[in-house]
Length: 529
Image 1: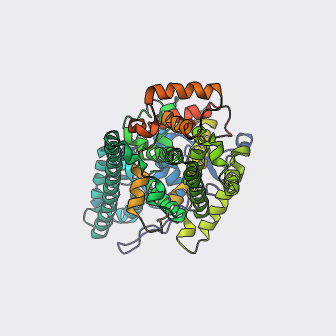
Image 2 (image 1 turned 90 degrees about the vertical axis):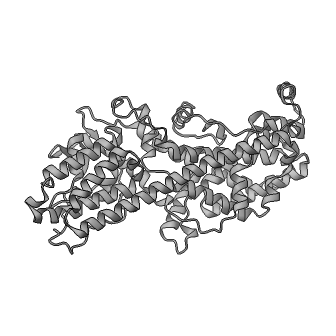
């Protein structure tokens, strides 16, 4: 059942020695039932401002939902509810405001403002409140980058742990774990900035020494299995830093009903998600550049066959994002027009991969393969079998259409919680995927090349393509002439290298969905980003 009635009673904690309330893992808690379109045709049940349908929480006022989040002596919220509400609440209320309300309810309603007044009651409720705060800090740690949220957390945990060593220790462990996560995030953001700086430095070197562009991927790594493994390292690392709330915050500025509440100005609200989408874009352009750079047809064909083998190994690993990025790079017009080069390539394996990622029928073949990889992950006997890296742009698009297809609020002003059950179900699956640790050995040299090697601009790709195989029609001839007037010969002008620039994620998706329907994402990455 998608959402159990939220009146689960936990065993009361009668002493300091009792354990913290236990909740099952988030994985697998979301059932298969989805949004019930016939909901309003049947009778509703109302409990304290919350409306249920077939024992599933369907809607409620924001205040009632907030109260439903806070534990009592006899009640602890279901973990699916905690995750779903914390994920979706930011559409209606800032995290710091929510934390403030939670603290107020905990202290006033549960008489925690004066712990000496009812020590027995405090002993029963404190472990549950600490458990709620632990789940919040573990699942949505980035909320606590806001000093206002962190301040409220410290105030509440201080009240709970006053005079009790067990609660003080629990609160301390929770805070330390949170600080470690936030520190790791800061280091990751610094690493991304350093990578960007390194690329800029390499561009400067190339302008002074154009001959240095002769280095290519095959001189760095000639084994497709190893390269696929290093790509998987990058994918899993970038996935791991995406917070679940970023999927909601990426679309906040599009929300009209609650616009005043959702105008987050912090540019970091979806920065890790955007960095991951940018990685897909970079990999696609890197593949296209590596194919177009060689002057000899035989060498270009060899590079194409190499990347086909890399893509196939990505598929075997379960790394669908790198697989699609490689296919996208090969399908770029400057690459696909190289007919003489492709004539030297054994394309049977590539045809199979393209079939697997065929966008027809809403990517039916890919979705089937993804389900297979997910099932393999569930029953995995090794860390390698646990890897599932989805085609991320399609994953985002699915969430986008779920967000656009259903209203956040119902006509009576209630929060449409059935919509958010479905959203949480999709995001919780992602949460499982991103926790997998990469089992492959890291190769610093290969990783550095993949992350920092300069790539061609669109114009440079076309110019290199025309230099390799001359233009075939008047349109191509005109374009070639224009490009040569601007840049000369691409292999002699490193200034034609550039980091790929990006629009905001929301702008990219808006451009994407205006294509015509909710069915197809183009394999050409330039229409994604």
